[in-house]
Image (tube, rainbow over all chains, first blue to last red; front, side, top):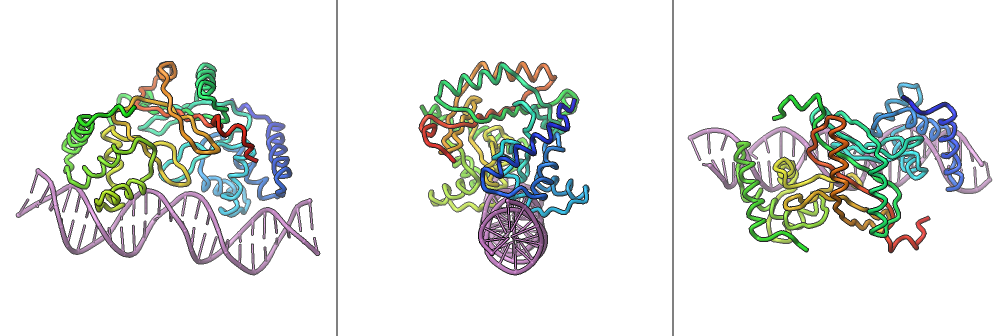
Length: 154
Length: 154
DNA sequence: ATCATTGCAAAAGCTTTGCATAAGA
DNA sequence: TCTTATGCAAAGCTTTTGCAATGAT
C-alpha cells in the first residue's frame, strides 16, 4: 500500500531542484538528504524525528539546516505542516498523496486517514460561495477509535 | 449577531463551577476571571492575549495561572484549542457556539467561519464507517480571500 | 485547619539567528 | 571569485514547574 515508486522519488527531487533554482537557491547534498528523509516517512513527524532519522542513516545534518529547509519544502508543495502537539510542529509529506482527512483517537493517539471526494467537493463549493480560491485544506476529526471505546477514560 | 446573552455567560460559569466541583478543584476568583476573559473574546486568541486582556481590565492574573487554567476550561467543554501559529497555541471559545469550519486567507490572515450541516453529516458518516465515536472536529480550508486574489504574492 | 491555588522566577522545550567556515555556481 | 549554505552555540519564544505564600472550603 505504499503507492510511491522509485521514479516518484526522483520526481519529487526534480520538483524541489526546480523550485530552488527558480528561487535563486542552491541544490545542496544537505537539502537533498533532508528531502529524502521527508519522503521516506509515511507518517506524521516533527523536526527532531527527521534529525534522528538522518543520524541513523549516518548523515550528519544539523537541526538548524532542517529547520531552515522545512519551509522551503513546504513552499515547494512537497510537505504539509499539520496540527501541532505539545509545542512541536508536526509535518507530513504531501508528495504523491491526495488530500485526505484525519480521524484521531483521543485515547490512544492513533490516526486513521480517509479520503472523501464528497467532502472535497463540499469544501470547494463552500469556498466558492465565499469567493475564496482554495490552496489547501485540513480536516481533523477527534474521537475514540473502536478499540478505545470500551475503556473509560478518567 | 452575537448570539450570547448575559444569562448565557452565567450558564457557562455554572458549567465551569460544576466541572471544578466534580473534579475536586476549587472555584476561585482567578479562575472566574480567566473564564470571563475567554468568553469575552469572539475571535481566536493565544494565552498572552488573554493575559493582556485581563491586565487591561485591571485584573492581575499571572501567565502561569492562565496556562494552568486553559486545559481545565477545555476539559469543561467551553474552549477549543485550534491550529497553532508560529509556536503559539490558539484558542477559541466554544460556549454557545455550534461547530463551524474556518476559511483562512493565506495572504491577509483573515478568517471566515462557516457552518455546514452537510459537512457535519458527512463527517459523522465517515467516522461511523471507521467505527469512531466522534468527540470534536476541526475543518480548516486555506486559500486566498476575494480581496487578495488580485494581488500576486510572489 | 487543611489542602489547593497563586505568583514569581527559573527551567524546559522547540525554533530561530549570528557568525565564522565551507562549498556551490 | 563571489555568494549562498552550513554548523555551532547562543538567543528567543512559548509553556511548564518548584516553592513559598495566599486563600478557599
